[in-house]
Image (cartoon, rainbow over all chains, first blue to last red; front, side, top):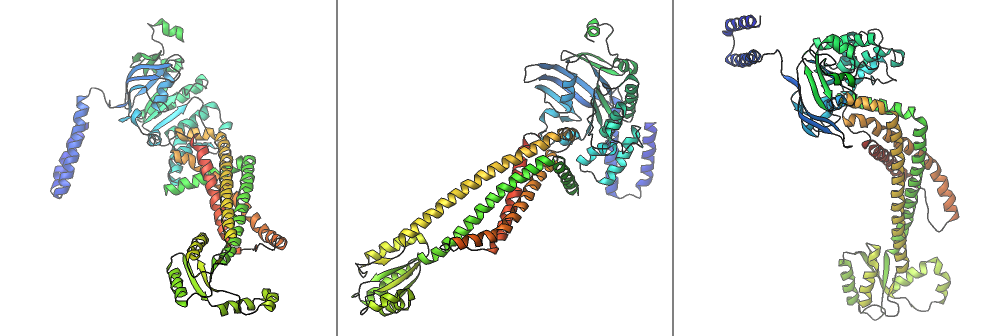
Length: 288
Length: 298
């Protein structure tokens, strides 16, 4: 399909070339060269779209209290991946999330997100990094004195976007999470699942490349959790990378996505389509 | 455009926050008002005193050098020219014996003495006006060494009074500065605590702001504006109270203490207004900036 498309494109180009000026030709040639390189790259790499969005390189994290939260973490998350981060409480999942959103810096090692090394990022640049990711938390973190619309719009307002753009983007995001019609409701009048939908709408209203969710279904009943999960899958299907720390065994086992299990600060398991527990390891079962 | 939108956001949040914590905001406004009233009184008293001092200064910057009767006129002229060439001297005027007598007689205060005067007991003199009060003593020493000076009564000036006035004004200046700096510190601390309360009330909003990618100044902006608002409101209240009470207080006091030429000076109001409003705004900004800096970090 792709090759045919390219050929057709080239044929059209040759036909039209006579009428082009020399500069235009050069520009076109450069463009074609670039697109060729891209194709070659795709051919060379076995997986589709494996440019890593996140990579942890020998990351250690020791808190000031002396707790060693992470020990030599190596992890690569390709673009468009859907990854569960599982493990018992205190294993280091939250630390990984905190490192990813740059609330903490690694003690040793490097973390790259979308080509940027987080440890070397300046404080001034941090807000602009956060604008490229979407965050969802267990406790929703909605502002109670703002309506659904205002809560979702808040992210864009903080970025200084114009009202007209905010209006269309918020409408889209609210629609995506299935809350159209509830724009003027306050969070207190919504169910837990609906509140989390608002938080998700806020996380994706600025079209981030990556969504990081920390126990997003932790406060929800199983049915609602499943609905929220469907929402994350839809967002992922649209192209956003999703990294989710979770305790929800049922969902992880049902979805059979990539599972990275953290235990005592180390990666215990990294399965392409894994389960919450490694069946072979009984210690994991006990830990749960 | 984006700056304007951010400013609007900051103004809206500051306004909301001010009303949400009305009790704390009002307490801060009242405290800052009192402090600014004190500062305003300080400025007014200082201004009145400097006005009084200016009046005295015009009088005391003049001295006269009495000339011995048998001094040749050429000596007098050469000394006069020497003084006139001195950069510390504004003007020199030669007053002959006759002119001195005429001046003396013309003064109604001397009416009784005039009856007793026989001949002309007055010296001819050089009337010297100096640029700075502190130069009076230097000119005096110069005159004392001049051979043409009257050895029995060499010079006339209010030297002692001058130095004392200068000292007093210096001390008052120091006291004023000390008082002002204390007031500044107190008001900055008050604003700081008000803003901390506001930060505490909005900590959740701040947390969310940071997570969705607000810049530090975007988060701080509303608080700094709230501080400036508090300062400006306080300054406006303090100013109106001072302006209302300034003329009656002046007239009351100038009736009681007639020896000090205290006067109502309407031109000072505009400079007082500028100082107080600017001061209030800066105190508010400084206090809130310090208050918010430690708590709003990414």
